Length: 349
Ligand SMILES: [Zn+2]
Ligand SMILES: [Zn+2]
Image (spheres, rainbow, N blue to C red):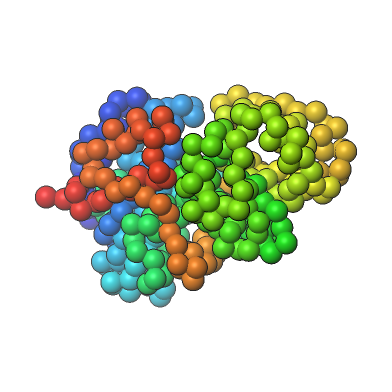
């Protein structure tokens, strides 16, 4: 039997989110039932609820930064027990057979992984995300939140944290490496914290110096305004790795000029319209342009353990569910430091 649970949903594209009831599937043999404690608000929640990324499924319950407690387990569950602290990120299933799934990169599943919300499970049923009191997921698509991390600051790690950890790890950020993080928002602030904890020298490239104090406090060694022309001259040929978290078009050739020989620029956000650049910006210095999308389950667990070991989560502002629509407006105007997290207790009763 399905269970009715309270949720916040967008009934139609661009409509405000409102309190509603959704059905969760029965707890199957390999499923766990999670009582959600906190759900982060990712900018992609807003893009999808407003149907800015192409046609979407409504009603939509967004939320793919989920942290909570296991309250029931299926008969075949081996990884989790009632009372465990767990998280769910951007996907809740994948084919488990393709070369990417087998490599632990389920986020690149060739059949298409099942998105946590605004997606369809392989049986065709719609998926609903974390702005709700409970969720049922296969135990293989949950991760353990270490005791050292409180659930509220852990929630945003499930998308923002892994989105930055994965490329920083893949391109070997660490001691002796110079890393630039472009943009200091929900994604960028995690990039600064993680790259600093990995031992890299971290520079923030932000539009203005408005967030400079924050950036340095979060672990950046240097902070530059990209609106200042002299920044690009001063930093030419500096970085081993540039992670671009900005989902707007930026002058790519100018940024590529900041890379050292064999440096890499990695994009983790996508602008609405394509960008262009001059191939000579890569040729002159054997440079690379790359992209990266969240991370697999194994790496997401590794990231949570890493953050716990280094004693940090996200910088958050906790809100009650009735303030979700207001929070959306503030995210769109970049008025959040650095992630809104919904206290799901406010959805109950
Ligand atoms: Zn996200
Ligand atoms: Zn697959």
